[in-house]
Length: 154
Image 1 (cartoon, rainbow, N blue to C red):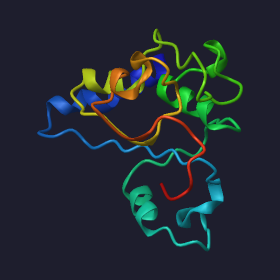
Image 2 (image 1 turned 180 degrees about the vertical axis):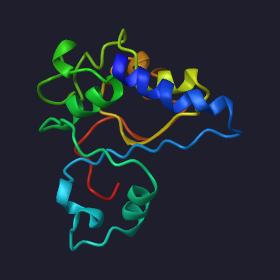
Image 3 (image 1 turned 45 degrees about the horizontal axis):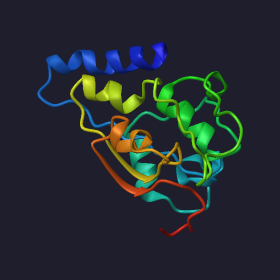
Image 4 (image 1 turned 90 degrees about the vertical axis):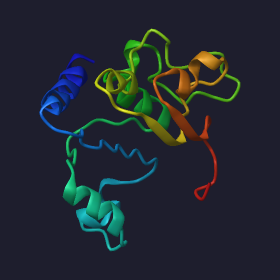
């Protein structure tokens, strides 16, 4: 989390000199391979993603997990999921746990430096109590669903 906080600091530090902070858009796509997008040579046309990659910063060295909840947890916290018990499997609909409430999340840090934060799509980090929902974890707005295993077109 220290590295993630430092990155946000270095992004936000020059904001005092500019009128408007840069937009930060993070795309996390389940089941999308590195070579499945046009800007990595895929035959599949992805013009919108190609444009975003050309205009922004592309992360090319990172770790992910074979299922979504640990990957999302790592992205949101900047920490290895095994440090807080979300390293295996996904958060199931009947689970009475989620991403621990004592973990500080990326949207909470972004709000400190003046950003509005929104999440579109799947949360999949806990929903059994209101405190675990994305709008209680730093996001101003959530449009999507809390669990996984939804069709590809929802």
